[in-house]
Each structure stands twice: as structure tokens, then as C-alpha cells.
Image (cartoon, rainbow, N blue to C red; front, side):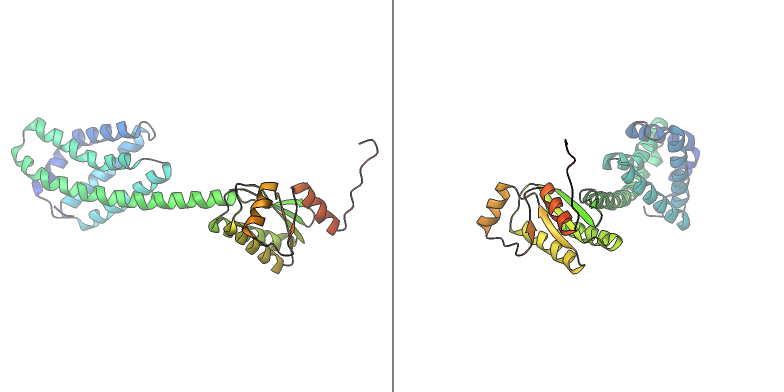
Length: 277
């Protein structure tokens, strides 16, 4: 059975049994979504789909297209709301169970023979629904990963003309790209002369991480900004020496306070301690 090519008897039964089948379908799907959608919203949603299924099985090609578009929209919505693949699939496949229970209750022998074709048709709809859900879920995950990258690479103002870039965790190519883009955009907006890249929270520094840092520093230097790398702990310093990593003329400091003091001095700012402080 394909879109618009169904036997008339099943279509007749769907019309005749609309209320009991739709009610049972709503009940089955409602159990799976566990109250995350109100009964009224779910009933309205399935009522629309039920009508489109009726028309599509009766040969209405427009309804067949609308049905698939509606299922795709619902699938994308479910993906964004965090529903599981099983919960999304039940929303379609439960229609087969609802109709089968009604056929069994009425002992309609003619309908038994057509249930196989109807089941195949619903399976096609379910597969299309799942494919849309999977694509939407992948997009949601990609968007969340991008947002996490942005949140994990803040650029903060430490002083007039001095920016701070505190890094925490693992520094890879994707994250370095975000760091570089965020830093350069902020430099354009602020015109800062200095940037302190603090790696105190970076779990490990290897050759790859060092190269990423150097690329970021070089990009900032092309914008007229001098970068200072802070947070070079003894263990990291030893690793850098062992690996033979060269930072060239890039200034490095043990901690953020030393880096800030250096950049303030380079900016011509002198801080005085109050007597008795």
C-alpha cells in the first residue's frame, strides 16, 4: 500500500471507527509521552493526522504530502523537546495497534486481509518520521556543542585596553578556532592592545595544544595586539621543555596576576598600595 493507493474497505473502516480508533490511538501515545503534552494538544494533533491518513488512503495526493509534512514538523519538534526515538516512533506506530484492536473486536475478516498492507503503509510513515527526527536531533546536538564551545571560551575585560581569555579543559582544533574568532571579534570591538591567554585550567599541554596557542597569538598580533600566556605551572613548563616547544618572543607568566601586572606596566599604568593596607 502506498500513498493514495489503498483498498477502500480500510478507508471506510477508518471513517466508520474514527472515534474509537482515534481515542485508543490518543491513549497509547499519551502513555508514552507521560504528560509532557496535554491530552487536548495530543488529541488535536492526532485528530489532524487521522484525517490526513483517511484522505491519503482514499487517493488524495495533496493529503499524502500534507501528512508527511505534518509528521516531519512534529518529529522536529519532538527532537527539540528531548523526546526519545521510541516515544516519537510510538506516535505513528500506535495507529496500527489501535486499528487492529478494533478489527479484532468486530471480527471483520475482510479487514484482516488488508491490515498487512495498512501496516506496511504506517511503517513507511514511521520510517520517514524517524529519519526526520534523527536529522533534527543531530542538528540540536551540533547547535548545543557550538553553544558550549562559545560558553567555554569567554573573552573578558581585565582593564582598559587589556582582555583576558581564560581557558579550561581540553584545547583542540575546533575550540581553538572559536577562541581565535571570539578574541579577534572582541579586539575589533574594543581595540585592546593586550590580551592575556590564561591556561591555568588547561588539563595538558602538548605539541598540538602549543601550536593552537601560537596560531591564536599570531592572529591577535596581526591585529596589533600583544598576547601574554599565563598559567604556566611547573608541570606544564617541564612538559614544554621536554617536548622542545618554542614560544619564541611570546611572553609567558606563571599566573594571571603576574600577566596582568606585566600588561598594566606595558600600558603605562602604575598601581600604588595604600599605607596600612
